Length: 106
Length: 156
Image (tube, rainbow over all chains, first blue to last red; front, side, top):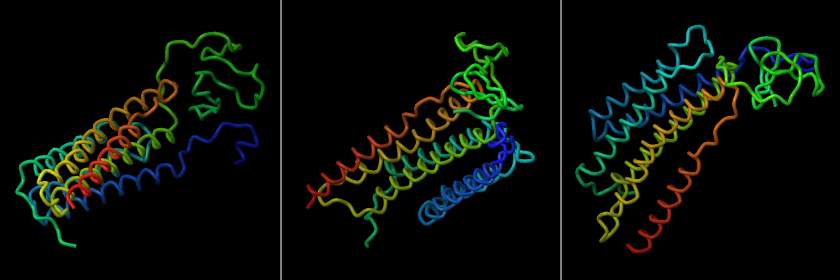
């Protein structure tokens, strides 16, 4: 922290923030993939769509930020928010109109 | 509290003023026009690209909320489909699972709106909005937990 002792402003380099953000995108993509894989057992179409969305999430995290620049990107974030809303609507349709389940025996 | 600006000067994000490097005293603070003094009201907010670290942090917060939304949807669906039915209460599982699914969809939409509002505040150098999502999440989960406990007790 030489810049602090010298009374200078912090450096503009975002340092590890970019890497932490990239890892957060990866965790989100893994979350999508896990839900997609779980859905594949019973609802193949929905499961495949969610798995594809997992790839889209990973691509949104990696692409669209040339050189790791720190500009805001509303487009990919809106896509992710809409994707989760769509998944919630599909889950709601399954919960309301889907066939009754006897549950899983533990 | 201050953040780095694009140049050598440091910006006080909650006041919209700048402090020149090396300056330590209160009298060294200047407003956006570079004039000394602290008593002038802030000018209408001019938008500039914020520090990249704050943009990244805002994006990570959004992604954390998205993961929370996904977990809520998955939990709601698992309750409806995988939980054994409550004896004599065929509406028991939907009563617990559907609110969680709806909450997941709401959190996804609201988290994007919060990201937008926070990014705008960062660009204008204004204080960040207080998020209402934690309160919403806490209230709905607490209510669902109480409903689940009542259902478990009644169905015995």
